[in-house]
Image 1 (cartoon, rainbow, N blue to C red):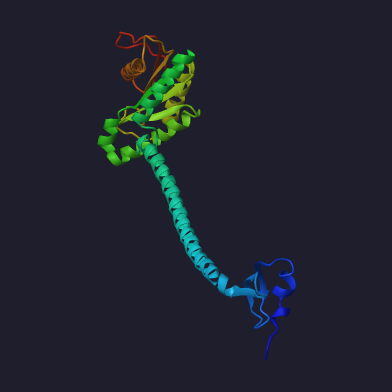
Image 2 (cartoon, helix red, strand yellow):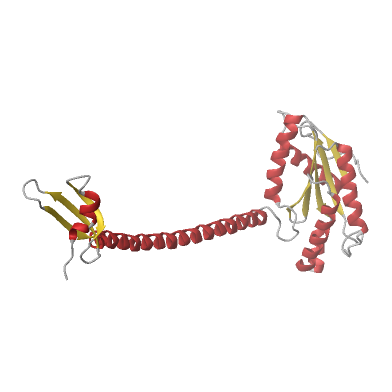
Amino acid sequence: MTTNISKGDIFSRYLPHSDSGTAIIKSVVDGVERIYAYRRLSGPPIVAAAGISYQQVFAPWWSYVFHSMIVMGVIILAMALLGGLLYRQIQQLLVAESELNAAQDKLEIIAMTDSLTSLANRRSFDVALKKEWGRALRNQSSLAVILLDIDWFKQYNDHYGHLPGDDCLVEVAALIAQSASRPFDIAARYGGEEFVILLPETELAGAIVVAEKVRRSIEQAQIQHSTSALGIITISAGVVAVCPTDKNSHRDSMAEADRLLYCAKINGRNCIEAASYQRVPSVVCCESNGE
């Protein structure tokens, strides 16, 4: 069987327009699509044509594309896995940071809180006193401190034991906290059976009211104390109010409150001694301003 190639596309479509060139056509011999290069020779009436299979030309390219897609797929999968791992690590770090901050907050609260009474501790009070002293100095406002002490508490411990003594301290602390009810008032355990209340922006008269409220609430609680002259737990208090200046300090105010507390003890206990001052007086005791 013979095939007339003159009826092919090269002769019928391309040679009439150009003596040489390239074309993608199907062979009239076997019907395979090929890329042909053709040229009409200048001498004899001969046309030279050579063709290569279209698929054969693009086979390496498709192989390259296929392998490239596999490599890209592996890279994308690896990046996705690494991204997921990184995201997980970041989330774990955020959780750990949050837990660390919460732990630090708890430790700070523990460090600033008396473990027995849950009031502020001495350290917390000292920080607050310095802060409020500076604020009162800037604002030229009054600041009051109430220093309280449980009467005959050593005898209470000796008679009832230290565990009931701790229970007594907890009960007294709760009553003190209830009486210092303003959000910015600070009630603290100062040490042993001593407590202190810091009253920012408070004049002497207001501080005496708070101190008397504390004294009365503890007296009315009727906590038994058989070795006390009064038969119940009572407190004595020294109350001082001061307008801070450059000539006095927060240490002076605490020294004055301690002096007034000593006066209350001398004057029979279960009472309040109070004073306003600009510098610490040199006298040993004072006249009673409370009951």
